[in-house]
Image (cartoon, rainbow, N blue to C red; front, side, top):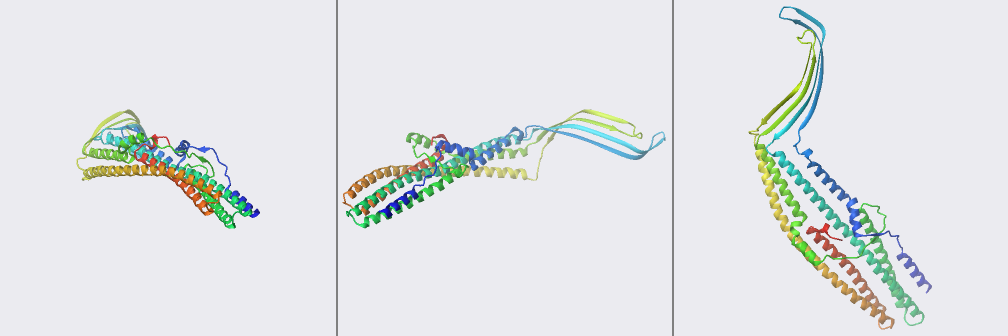
Length: 439
């Protein structure tokens, strides 16, 4: 009796290690932390900022170019000058200095609409970058909840295993008392001891897996890996009527379809911008300049200073560039055709993915409902078996089997619950509604 009690105490201490838990990590807080700290989301947001800079008017080519120039020169020469009247003048070390400064403006009035279509293309590339960032966010959220639900499942499994361990402990105590008073043989005690050790090992393994999964989730949120937390095990499924509305517009809201549409627009603008090589370019130039010169005695002028404006209008028409421009236009047309073909392919794939995801969700949800009923049945079976065991009508092996059936039913129900919710999130992602629902 003392040895058995010591064994129970050691197993209880080994299984009952409690780690300090912080406040509940809600689903909303999970998403908030990920949006702020996740590495992939940070990079995606920076890509959007780059695309935003690219679509700025400063990168459009519509603004003029303004440049300032300045210069100066100094000459020292030995000079001999003969004038028309025959006079000769020789100067050693004749100095000449010249200074100039100007402000020059260049502006393209017309370039065959190339910059206009480039500007439109950059706008669409910015919109495309936003869609790509949204895809990254949606994928990260699904990944987050995959790990979050795993933490929730393990936490519920731990509670189930703790209850199983407690029931086995009570069974061992009853077996020891019965053996002490000669009501049963030693075999029941040994069976209970073996089962208690197995339950303890299962509980310790589940707790270790739980801590590892916690660290995985902390990594995705980019916070201290040592932080412990509790999770919300409540699962609410989307109203079927609302889900049906999402499915009706699923193809048009799908992120891959939206990106394909933007890629077609981008390639269309590339084609239109390429055609600008067939048209002339008209440019405007203007400058304001200052020039000053100081000359030696051999020059007619001792010094001169000039200031003034100058403007000009120029036209450039590349009548033939060797065929490179025409080749670029042809290739742009082919690239646009490829994008349109790719969109047709994506459309078919999205239809298939939504149909498969809908079927998986409905199947997993139905399995979860069945598992709920199975837990009720297994609970009733174990309770009746426990009463029969107390009355001596069944053996400890039969009671253990009923206990294992209940354990398997409860853990299977936990798995089915989170598996169904994860399938729903994947379906919402495909229909483009993942960021528009409460988790």
